[in-house]
Image (cartoon, rainbow, N blue to C red):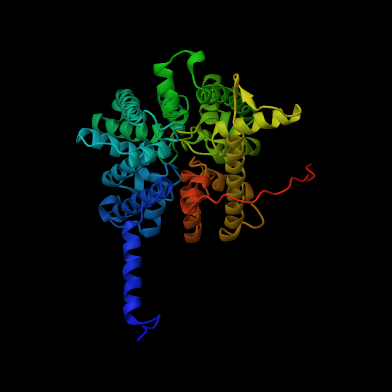
Amino acid sequence: MIENANSPSQQKQSKLANRVRILRYQPSPPQFIVLAFLMLITIGTLLLMMPVSSHNGYSIGFINAFFTAVSAVCVNGLSVLDAGTEFSIVGQSILMLLIQVGGLGFMTISVIIAILLGKRIGLKERLLIQQTTQSTTSQGLVRLSIYIFIIVFAFESIATLILTFHWEASMGWKMAFFYALFHSVSAFNNAGFALWPEGLVAYVGDPVVNFVIITLFVAGGLGYIVIVELFKKRKWSKFSLHTKIVLSSSLIITIVGFSILLLLESMNPATFGTLSWGDRIQASLFQSLVPRSVGFNTLEITHMLTASQFLIIIYMFIGAASGGTGGGVKINTIVVLILATITTFRGGGQIHAFKRRIPQETVLRALAVVMSSLACVLIIALVLTITEDMLEDHFLEVLFEATSAFSTTGLSMGLTKDLSTLGKIIISFTMFIGRLGPLTLAYALAKRKQQSRLGYPEDNILIG
């Protein structure tokens, strides 16, 4: 007798086969990264929901805990609650730990632990390290992980020591040490969480705080690969093309931003009215650097001119460098597209910089990153105007918030703490997308690369 296709026996075999496939499932490196981030966010949410994490002894609720955990793991800095007053020491410590793991990278931490335990680093782990550090080569990745750990420990330790001595007179040793450690971790990882409700506005003219915080988030934003090359090679001629582009473009964009902000805000009595020229220079330098992906501020963003706020939006979208703790579409991505545009205006040919040719695949990838990121920011801004009831006014605030969330910058014009429940979920999703990158998520969700076997005839299309 022939068994029916839907017989209990075949259904049982089908279920068993599905279970085997699930058990044998091996996620690709991008998929593993997405799953790891989701796991960290889940753990962080549960920890921050505990009453002991709250200053008043009551749970802050699931949505607020989830939003804060996403912001910390994605090293963003946007917060619906004030970290200094709403969280206890336990909650602030959990927040700091989430920032450190999210910024340093779970694979780097895993490699260091494996080395300490004497375990072998396999091919799968090396591929994951390459994906998380955005390294262009699979060679020397374990050594790079060790360098990353040393770099992070050195920068954060020295900064903590300096700030502890600087704040000891006004806070006492214990509080000064904790505040110094928290802000050092937050700054180097480009998170931007501060323990003061107004951020670092009180230190707008403090050269020690300005120098330490700027050094930390600039170093983190440049990326580990650049820092390693700076220490090992030391000569411009020996630097890789990536390092040369990151250093030169970062210097140019900083000078331009500093000059524009100093000029604009010098006409604004709400920000520069009571500041000396020395303080104005410090404030302009600080605010021209922080939009590159760290949410600290020494000036009230809401008091700045509209032109300055729009400039910050542009800088937030550009972001820091690839392979660092910063966000945005990355400065090197923008440089590649600028070089491609200049080459097109000149009549075509090879796209090059510093006597090195840039592959066409890199240009297409840069274009994909910018276009998908721009589309994401605009769609999120459009949705927020509806959910936050801002259809007729305050669009710049919405665009600022959407860009800040996507670029993992953490600056805000005041909209974050007034977000609706749906708005909090949307911003959380945006921070997650921005941290992982649109292409990483696309690769993670794709089952396999689709390559066309057909060759199509070439034809022209009108442009411009």
